[in-house]
Length: 372
Image 1 (cartoon, rainbow, N blue to C red):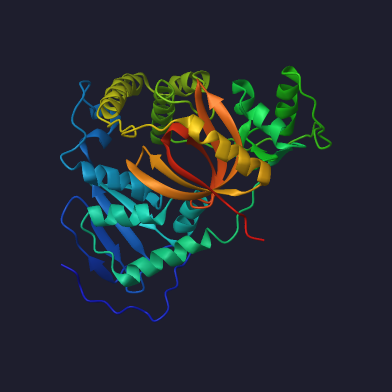
Image 2 (image 1 turned 60 degrees about the horizontal axis):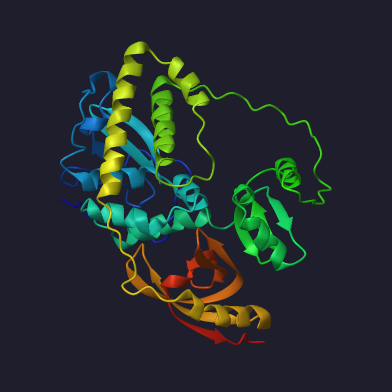
């Protein structure tokens, strides 16, 4: 039942929740939403699912996740946009404020995902609520400050050659242009790695500096349990896909040693549950290759011509993840090859970032003259 409420003319979301809420929207389980009349205080509660019970009460044998998988998925999404307020009487409490929405925006979590999670819980996404969410989310998109290490090459062939070498490709975080890349490591590490592979690079800022030591963060036992399980899940993912940073088990062993023996046993059992659930999830994913793979050789002359003339390409491309053909305008950077499969590295104007395209998934390609 939705109680009537009066929405303030202007929506202002404070950086901390208001108290107490004066208007309530009650949703049937598995979730309950509570907001105030200005939609500045948003609280979502979930009953404790079976797998989230205290570790000492976990069964050793694998158990079903829940009778409401949509609720579990929605809870995981909402957690990225909210502060966790703890568990009381078997109920998890999440609070969404302007600060948590801005934080989610800074982490590039899509607001559409939050809207879909709320709708999957049968929570009405009213216009005032949606406007409040958008207002808080926008605060995290206004400015973004980050120290970065840039690698600049004198021409595109150098950067392409570096990126196609597996040991050196791990240095790259993002290709910014055909001659510029954002690195995922500090300048000293980048310079050392390049030198080990026979490359010389100028790095005037590469010198030793004394960094203030970070203040150790005291973690509660529940936080250490969650952190250990998260690390184990990251390690399990390494068996199925390449990770940006190789997993290290030594920190996990040290974290594990700080926990009581009974908790260690429960965590070990839960890790086995996660491993089986991950394998089951991956086994059930559909594989959707293009119906008729194209001949990459047909596209290479067009790509080379666009590269030479510095023109754009209009591309029809089969996207396997969505099982559909998409139409994109791209700026080609270079061609590359991985395990015998040719690719195009290009800036996609549709996605707003640099992407890699398999040439056997290209369905049509047209050179487009760049407008002056």
